[in-house]
Image (tube, rainbow, N blue to C red; front, top):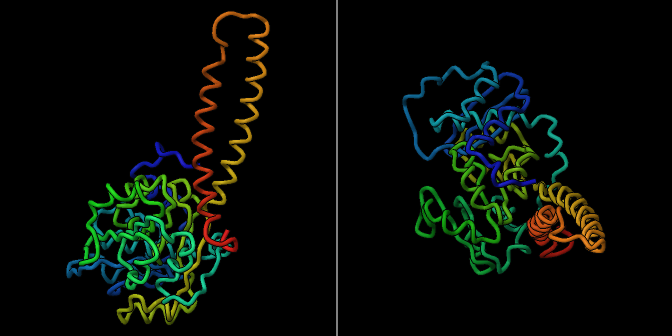
Length: 327
């Protein structure tokens, strides 16, 4: 259950490092667009930086290193370290990942790198949509919804980072690139998007159901379809090309799990309220004077019900708009 007060600056990183990140790094590669790491024969990805450097002190030393020790770089403010850590974490988590195995593969007629937006199109049509991170070809949806793109390095059609503070809380849907995790913008953006339908997306997505605790409603990450071709594409500077050679988008609905929690909480609160109301009626029928002693408890239950009803309705609407086959 999402609690805004619990969205701390470092909790996402603690969560990642609490995972069983066993094994050694078998291969690591920093391509023009993607950073690749292999652990336990499983590949993991993270988006590379848009800048290069000639002074990485650990170049040539990653192979054979303990995955856990490299994963700890996820808290580093050195972006190269954080990116290789994210790829390492994803690689270590991909083996026998039950959430990924249960997720829905996306197959549609859109360009592969835009298949997530095509999947959600029935739900986001005519909605206010904010996309964090520029995805090539997004302009094809400009007449379908009110879409705004916020980018760290904005192009002519984008807005800069600062716009997130103003636009994200007012959005109906937010599509947040998972590269926000290693670049440390995730905690604040997730906080801003707490009352929106939040989709965390991209090859950098870690397949963790606990991300629902940060307000994430859907994970739209990738499965690897051809490890060798993916590795080759990354090495040869591939960007969106990986969606045609080595990965496929999948979607996991974390909100369904949260809806079950809210449904149970609402049912329990209603039962408590009915019990207190009967007790209050008995109190007044006995001609007691003054306010019913547990009146404040009854008020608190009513307030909690209002909050939970609102959150449940948001999740319900997100899953039942568009067409029924998506719910």
